[in-house]
Image 1 (cartoon, rainbow, N blue to C red):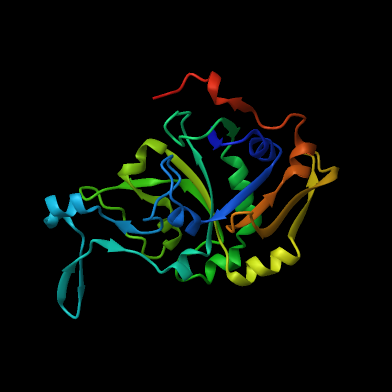
Image 2 (image 1 turned 135 degrees about the horizontal axis):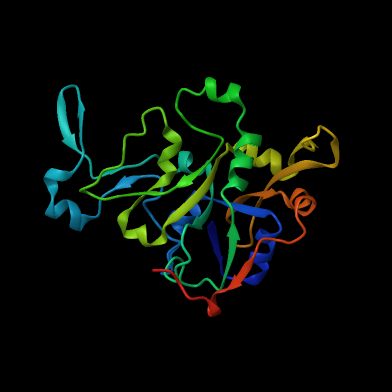
Length: 254
């Protein structure tokens, strides 16, 4: 089970019926808050000053033309990072996860499995030498100066799933879209719609299709997003939306 924490009931209801808003990763780099959303080191491997001052010999070592050097921070530029759009959840119902949240929506990992099946074509993967994925999902791995993350090498998509152990209380599970400016502009004017026929186990075609719509936009605060709309399919597949819980009445897991 995954838990999506939200500040308002309106947002929780949208998610519960199958509408997921993925925000640009640079939002979480640039915003300033004290409730757990902000992380200026997103998409990087960066060690805090107090760590590398105490344990300078534990910093990762790089080399160029035979000359070795130690790395305090390894980070792509913002033009690259802004191609990531993320939807963040937690694997635990923990009051500390996001401090200003008032509601939580219960979700299943298989929703993201479905997105992955619909959005990642095999031919795209075979020609992708950098290891990026148009869509991915997984648990965040936490690192510090004593426990470095595994090298990304040809699995570059994993760069969006590493964070410093300062954030390990969040037990974060996220989904990510890696989308170009061209994709953003195109889906802002005309949503990308994916339709698949549905069949029963006996091979009879159902009277509804699997429909996923992706469209982009900019919210009232100026942040870019890509919205995944699976609501029509979700309604056909089940009678009730995902469960929403008012956090004021929850006994939390620590």
